[in-house]
Length: 123
Length: 123
DNA sequence: CGGCATCCCCGAGGATACTG
DNA sequence: CAGTATCCTCGGGGATGCCG
Image (tube, rainbow over all chains, first blue to last red):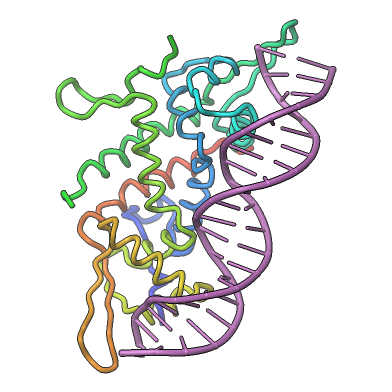
């Protein structure tokens, strides 16, 4: 018997979900999939704090990104429920982006990861 | 001026590091790079809890992985300081893997991410 | 048993040009 | 201003075979 059926995490019984090694890995992989696009984290951190930016402002904030990638990554984040996209039917067109409440609530978990990485033993 | 120079996180002054949008994104990207190999999280969750497994036990615990990928991912995790690799000079050879203390201490942060993903608004 | 070497494929992402 | 559309490159990862 392998240990793939072991429980992970420190959930008090009957309160949180329990995970096997596989389901926990799958869950985190899904989260990483939402974040691993080459520019998604840069976009995310530029929108943290309740900020609203238009397409061209994001382009200027992220100098090396192409229009194609900015569009693509924003659309994926919108599909994932992290980013809210608002189109104003004007001429010239205006499109604004800001984080959903759920997207904004990711901040503390990323902070936790950053603090973990700061604790890495030197070498 | 763009907002790329804003501070991120809720650190009390003079205690934790402060991040700009770029440096925070870079930090999290480095963490994701440590975790995003196709099998690394599965390996990680199989080793959480202070377990020690040999190469062949990991192979059996992760049925679809190839030897090449198992070796490669383990070596990268070893380089990153997450996994400890121990070779026993015996015949037949024996190699055991377990998490470093630092690797083990990643568990709560991944739990935080899982709990975040569980809060996703239904569609 | 626990690898390493080689070949190959596919998709993420860059460069460039065009558009409502 | 805010996108599409096309073409192309590069490297992650699979399959297979050999080795101390």
